Length: 244
Image (tube, rainbow, N blue to C red; front, top):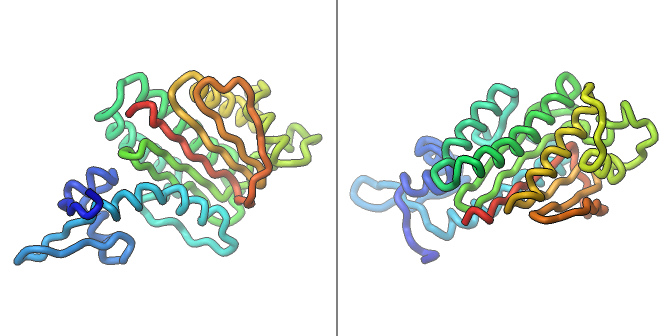
């Protein structure tokens, strides 16, 4: 029921965050609770939780498209690789409650490869805000990663000087085997991501600059499109509805 009230513990479990985080969100007006009972206990509307779970990719997109961005909320912001790795481990643990060991390993591997790429290829060269946006909604089977880095075109153009557009660079990154040296390794990593997505019940949306692509289980071809908007760096949405 859309108007069903959930306890703060139930809401925290659905969102994959701590109770203390929900209290902070309430105080900041980010996700408002309903107070009830003589002690004013916090409850949350099911409809508000559902809406938030569907918005994490919108939040990420707003951030990578912003001209004058702010740092993301701390619960979704990994400024360093160590923070990202810690949060990736937390995600893996939570995901293990609903999925098989093999599925958990694959989804974590894809998320880790994309997140680590951001640090590997932007370290010391972040245009503005360093680090990545990393958030997930396990109930909605969705992971979102984003960075305001240099983007794939700039990365690969160092070794493939003939590349002139984000569309060309994105196609190369997902289809061509490059050497194992930095920065060519980025292309190899995304080819690894592609192999997992197309052989499992997952899907992937990837945008860099003004180019994007969608991959899903069984796709043989990589088709790159001209995106409707421009993002700084990369924006990625991983969906795993096949685990429902």
